[in-house]
Image 1 (cartoon, helix red, strand yellow):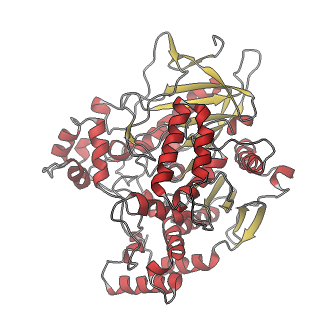
Image 2 (image 1 turned 180 degrees about the vertical axis):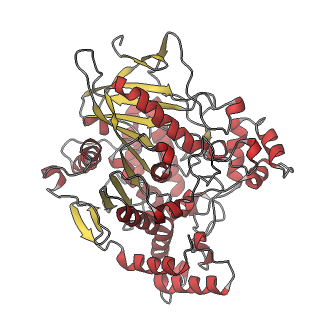
Image 3 (image 1 turned 180 degrees about the horizontal axis):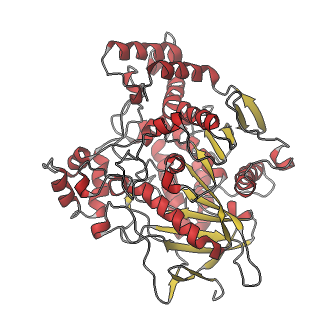
Length: 569
């Protein structure tokens, strides 16, 4: 153990060892602070570089999560005073006589900007560490603590603290990743859902130039309506029961609240997964300042110039909208919409109840449901939800980036369904409470009784579920990271082959700048071609890999026409 020692800018770190998916050894340094604790006067503010320490810091155990409600079971997790930490995983540490420079991949977790963490029970490194990379997984502030946004400039809380945490983590990586065998000149950021949107936001920020060199955007984009927040003083006051309306008084009271009280108060605002409503917690356009990260609306940036001119992978899952079923099952009062005005993206500026809004809702009803009522075809409702909340904004993003950038843009759609697709089970189960209970047991078994995990998962697999085509939001994660609900994988199995495929394409991209640099039997000898402004081809990631054109084209044509005639940037 004594030889697992690294000295970073702030001091010495004692790490430990782990084993990858195939039994290979790697080193891990856990809970490493990349910024000062965001407490006291730093609460809600831009992060500050970490303090140095004396002696050797123990980096053998994972650090605290940022305060939030658990992503699956909603109980409070985390602590505020040391949550801005990251985990570093590497196969080889450099020596004086043997310098090492490996491609670096920095993971940004999802969770609607309100939950999630870098914890290995959800994002285990064991698959990715089979490849020749350095992996970094970061935390960032969430919900009110990460995305409080006040108009009063004297308060110094314009918003985007969570995004600024990500930027600070990337600055730490630039200064220190070389000590772990990483190449600071070859850094790829990647993330899914809100993490994917965050990756895209980071590519739009002038202040992040040079902090990374490639990006992978999974099931998210800065053009997704759900990824935009707002000045949220009224919502914060409502959540916490404040009668005050002046921002300075709200902040004064808010600073005295415990992190737990703040997190628990957020649950009073229910999320309804409708693109016609703006969410309270998320990135905002802020005034120019030395710490600012987003000073123009992402739509305007993408229309005028696109993001950083770097290689990009971007895509989505074929059944993103099935996520709505999870919302229906977990948020009281959310049902199938009786009319579709709230499914019209609010960025189009159509006033609810106006004649134009009603006409648009009727157009959508005919396009998706024909002569049926909305509640009569739930599969089409999933498609509508998926198109408005995920698929069309992501397709707009990749087309605009390809238009403005000379660097390759690789597009994909995941259609692969296997026993690894946990979120599909979660959404389609016929006995939701039983499935939740089995999932909770699986999570507990990882920590307290690992030998029981397989039995719990077998029990989960026996719960009846409805069959439904399409890959649910977040099911791609199971092919990149082992989780607390990942079943045992036999080497040489089809699941093993699917995992290898995903991992190889993602790490190829990080190492070489293209996901299929060679003809590879493991990748079905496919050459993943970048899109062009004239010809948009996707890699369909199914049981086989195939290049296809006009993906979801009929539905995208409808939305392209709507945006052409109604969007004002």
